[in-house]
Length: 401
Image 1 (cartoon, helix red, strand yellow):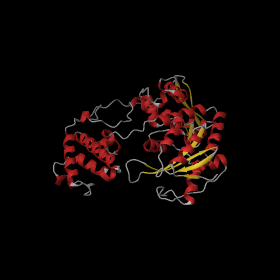
Image 2 (spheres, rainbow, N blue to C red):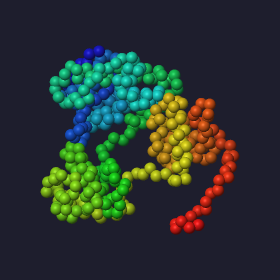
Image 3 (cartoon, rainbow, N blue to C red):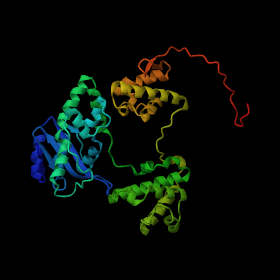
Image 4 (tube, rainbow, N blue to C red):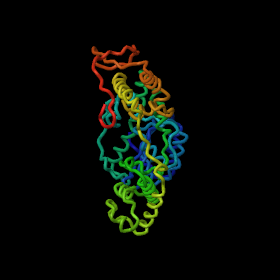
């Protein structure tokens, strides 16, 4: 099916009037954010049983697209997380219903498949390769670029249908739909400036006043990047933020000598930054908004190790992407007793959480099955194997008994 180019408001209105009556539609976006803070939408691809269009967001008002997202049927997309963010920024709306083919395919044993590999394996169709470095803001797009963009939605309905049929056969459709709904509900608000310092790799190692300074400087950087719509790295590098946090400069000379600044700050910005540093120094270390940690009670660490091994085995047995079942963070959150974790409710709790709880409470044990060469959780006998190996007495801090 050839794609129709849409670059007038009237054409877009007519297309949306047609698609909004459909139970499902395929959608994809092309965007750029390499030189901006916010993603800039450059192309929207839409497909439905009656047609396929490429919408030029540089030429049309996207209000009708927002209407489709809010009032239309199920949006079929592949690896939709970034597309959802882009659509929210571009037209203030995201779909009311979503089916992510990459996410759903994970419940059939596909591990984060690309669209091209999924189309080939499910439909036997090989997509033409395109230039990943295409500048989608250029006009006019070449015929090859248009074909490549159209391929991103041309087969999504057939992929969607095939995945649903396979998921229904193995009784996992509800799991996939629940996961797609969770992806759609994920918050996509702008970065909280006060927590921007969390993204800096060495943030957890900071101590004392350096914490407050890092938090204040990173927040200042984030706010300036938002206002200028520029990547944060072009305002101030992470290296410079850490250097300022450690050295806490009091003068322009001290500030400009910090590694990573590279002379990019004008004098007014530099003076403003010195004020920010002073404000950060006044923050008590205990009051700093600290990055979350994944610490787990040392007494539960052996249980986490056993549970991780069992989850990996379960992933192989069920042919489900292990990352979909439970990540290390999911497991630790559950073992810490958080009621909001992914293992605390829904299908993950029934499949994994309840059994991990039996393991932690001592009612289940891990065993190796020699005939099959795998691991299994089974009821615990409670009979420990005796050992005759002597155990040394506890030692004090000096090493003396």
